[in-house]
Image (cartoon, rainbow, N blue to C red):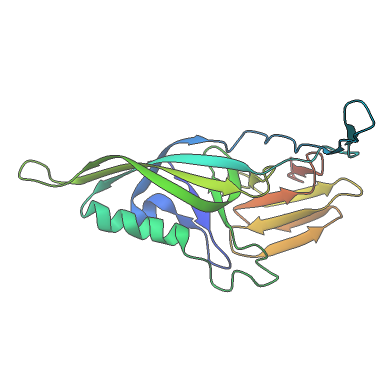
Length: 218
């Protein structure tokens, strides 16, 4: 079976969702989409036609919603599935320290090379089927909804790269926060740098053009 999605929370090592809980992610919505721009600030003067708009010098984006369709098929479905949901909902250890900043977790797929920083929002079941005389395993299917506070959040991977390194080239005047699979962070980075010996990371950029991620050995 191909690698499934990974979750990395606070200073924990990344957890393979399938290996840890037996949960498979069947479909995603929202991970790759660019969020909507924020509405510009406006003033509506009574003595003037229309409105006065303040347009910033760079595009500013809102947050966005991400949905995951998931399936668990195995013994004791509800108990095992609840362990997975509990892990999503519970805050990470020391989540509000400066190193962790906002406490949301990283979700990443090496197969699709996609990811984001998310916080749990809600869940709805689409199917539950429990063991009976003719059924040897439980089936649980659900749709999970998450909020992505920085809608430009995205993932980058070193899977398949001999160097196991990424170089982050940051646009002058911009900054990025980087959250690595081993639980370490680089916050408010403003200059080009290289990170070695990582599997993947999630990047929160300050703008849509803040960064270019490259492999120095390609």
